Length: 203
Image: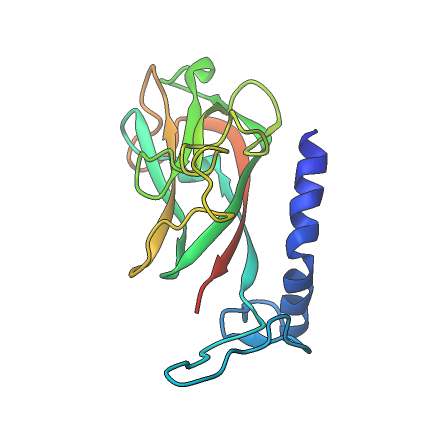
């Protein structure tokens, strides 16, 4: 079920992703690169100005966070994994726990969790999920995503975190028992999460 969901969504944005490959790594596709043919015939007439049509503006962003980043001398640790341009619409955010998280000292492994939001401590993208129990993927089931990304809150095919300004994507790591770090080093011994974001930027 989860795999079919991911495959379907990737097929939806595959043309844009392939085109970004042609542009070159790191250059992105937020410049309004034109499709070879317009799927919409531009309107015309008095007072009508067509500013953009048939441009590829969807991109895939992938980032990995290792346990070594989690050094806060407290029960929570926030990290910004990316900043979205103004007028971004997020279609999907998935967290892939590729290595379970574990405590070396001070904290308790069985209390470790994470959330993802549009601000520190937010849950707009992903509700709280365990990062200690098993290698797993989160965000490809309705029960796992936040209120802005679930079936009830998903408007016009995506979530727009901010129209007139940039918006961060923030991950919060939480320990219920014992600090996550010392302020200079982590109290964890292992752990890694890879995040995938598919988003479009409106002109």
